[in-house]
Length: 555
Image 1 (cartoon, rainbow, N blue to C red):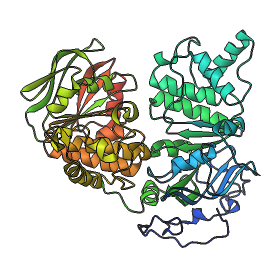
Image 2: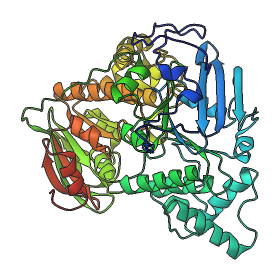
Image 3: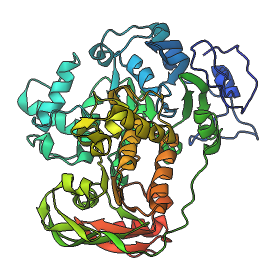
Image 4: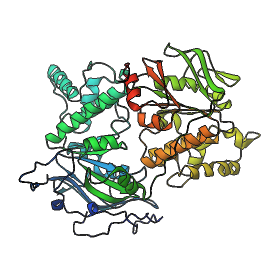
């Protein structure tokens, strides 16, 4: 992050050049501003005006400085002279579409990988961590989107095991004192749990908060949060934000990675944007750039949003009538051809279970109708044969085949389409799937690469491509379709969903993201306590949906 460099402001699109040596930058003054020049901050911490003037402020010390970081993986340049500086007592947001280099930068921070070139300094001292444990011992605490808890162990064992694995003293050897300390750690994130309770019995939101509790228990100098609120409801997310602010008040620096602009604007003090491995906006105060500018910096171009005009009334395609779900609840639900129906529910409401039941992904008693044909609950194979595509909430556990190529993942539900006499026609498969991957802008464009090598957003595109590949697609069921994906991938996925609905596909979406539902849906089914409690029209406001989720009438 050279303070004396100079670049002209530009909004031109970056050339399609993946070389580490050149890239046309989307540049603004934040890219090169020296720390001393960033004194009039546009954050939620307002400066006091004295005699009509803003006073000079003292910038907090830099807790972590990364300069000119470059990292290659074979022919792919993941980072190209990237810069990042985290200041003590501040929340620093890191933005960039999936594949921009955020994950690689985080891996370098936490000691998981080493940069090919560049420097890393912790509190002004050069560091080169040889392992994640070494970084944690130095006070760098990573909290990933995909949890690393031990489900079979108790809450107490998980808290203690993390401390010991990180080379810390862990909980007190005195049993009673250790339990008291564990409760104190849980209290920091607003949890009051039975310490002997197995983690596998906790809700997803509780597990996320437990992961954070064990990470910030002691000696947290730098907290790295990677999509920490993906599985949290509003109250749990606000609880997390309180923890983050408390840590900052104690002098910790926080790196906050999120695709939710509302959260970033609410919590962060500064923002850095990566594009194609390079820093294009560097430590800009929150409020200096509007959302459109940040998105353009991330993409190098403007995103065109599809507009939903509603669906014509048609015959029901996906129908459940009096079926008994695995949860014991009765389900009555239908989705018409060309209609997009949203299942709106808080975390743990049962919305995901209802959607999974409609796709044949969970067992129960009864049948789901697809037009005039039927499949039994839990018979996913027959559901696919009848044209019901499904995108699960957890793409890693249920959706992807990580060692299989992008083409192989996208064609997995339609192999009969490309096979003859029991033999897979590779050429037919490639000719059908590659256009779908191009249509969804798979990045990087490597259809033969393993699914595990792609970023989260691009892995999600593979699951959407799998739906598009079904030759007789009649219904599409999606669970949290854009959770943890970047702005560009979100737009591509939404566009694909709308296009499928326009072609006559019945679409059912379960999502805790109300912005997503209101952008897509013709009507909403509000889920509470495992059951559909209320139906709202597509014209309903987010406030009305939130009121329904809470079980009260909108004001």
